[in-house]
Structure formats: structure tokens, C-alpha cells
Image (tube, rainbow over the protein chains, first blue to last red):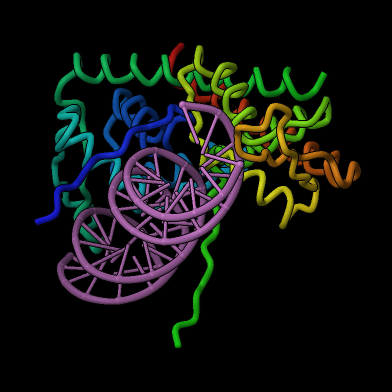
Length: 125
Length: 125
DNA sequence: AGATGAACAGCATGTTCATTT
DNA sequence: AAATGAACATGCTGTTCATCT
């Protein structure tokens, strides 16, 4: 029944998922958001830099932040006028874990920045 | 018989393959190199930043630079003492293409740097 | 149409194996 | 063992489909 060996990272650049999780946490620290709302916001932010995330990645990030990281909880909210579908709004569940997660990602972002910086220096000067 | 639709990039960070190709070109501009030699050199360079590329990625990068990009050519060389296997050494075949490729990657690296920079600013200040 | 979620599919890349000297 | 190359395996993420209001 097929052992599944897991695969190691070679430590290249940060994954999109982690990058988005960081932004999601920060946004939710400042108020409640639901999935597509976050998608719109992030698309708007990154489009000038050529990056347009996909809705499914946002949902996957949210689900992992809830189930695995245990950083967020969700509340289902029926919107006002209510001809639209109910919305799944998230808020911070564990502020300590949120902080710890952000700290990790920060370190990785800085490492990645150094990698890119180094590449620019090593290959163009 | 199964049409294969191809998939678009969302434009997140640069791929490892392109990153390595850039370094390979630059190294080969300054002399001849073969695969494992490049691997050792690059591992040494990046290890302090937590990145350790794999031998197969180097070979794939070299093969693509030869076959698809048409930037390199190879020469098989029998090493001196010659108890070791012959070595596949590469040199620049098309300098113009090499320059053009590097220019593209440079632009992408700068874009990626901005993305990371932005993330650090947006989430930590 | 707006929102959420899951299934499906491709692709980049990590892992292993084969071959040669 | 050093070197090259290819086959195989897995995880990330893009695409599509289903369901609901």
C-alpha cells in the first residue's frame, strides 16, 4: 500500500501560498474579509507588478490558515439586502500564532530578497 | 485524442530554471564549464542563503540552453589523466541571444525584487 | 451574476536509477 | 567514485465544474 516519501525543499524562493497567507493575515488584522473580497484587493495590489493570483489559491490559503495553522476562524454572514449568497468571513483566532507565522515569513522574504539581489549583482555588473 | 490546453502563468516569482540559466550563462561567458562543476560552484554560492540546487536541474537548464534557447554548444572532452568519464563542456554559441536572454531575466528579477520589497513594506511597518 | 468549494490537470522540480569511465 | 542523462514521483497551482443565493 505504497509508502509515500516526502520531498525536501531545495530552498529556492518562497511559495505563492505562503506569500498570500501573509497578506491575508495582515488584511484580517485590520478588519473582516471574505474570500473574493481578498482576491479583488490582492489582484489590485499586484497587478502593476504583473502578478494576478487565482481565486482557488486564496481559498486554499484561507482553509489552511484555519485548519492547519489554526490562525483564523470563520463566521458565515448573510449579507444585508440578501439576494447574494452568504459570505464566509474570517477573523483572527490566535494572535500569537499569527505573529509567529508572520515572523517566519518575514525571515524568508528577506532571504529571498537577498537571493535576488545577489543574482542581480553577480550577473550584471 | 485529447487536446492539451496550455496553462497560463499568474506571474508570481521567477522559476528556478530561469534563475539557474542566468548564472550558467554568466559563468560560461568567463570560461568553459561542465555540469557537475557548475553544480558545485552554484551550491557553494547559494548555500549561505539556504538554497541548494539539484544536479538534474542543472542538466535540464544546460540542455534547454542548448536545444531551445540555442545559446550554448557543447564539446565532449576527455579529461587529462583519464580514468574519469568524459566531460561535457559548454561554451557560448550565440552571444546575441545570450545577451537578450540575460536582459529578459534581469527585468524579471527586478520585478520580483519589487514584489518582495512590497510585501515587506505592506506587512511589516 | 457573485460566492465558495472541490475535482481535475499541467508543469516544475525533487528523487531515483542506469550507464560510462 | 565522478559524470551525465533519463525515468519516475510529488507537490504547487492553474482550470474547470458544481452548488448555492
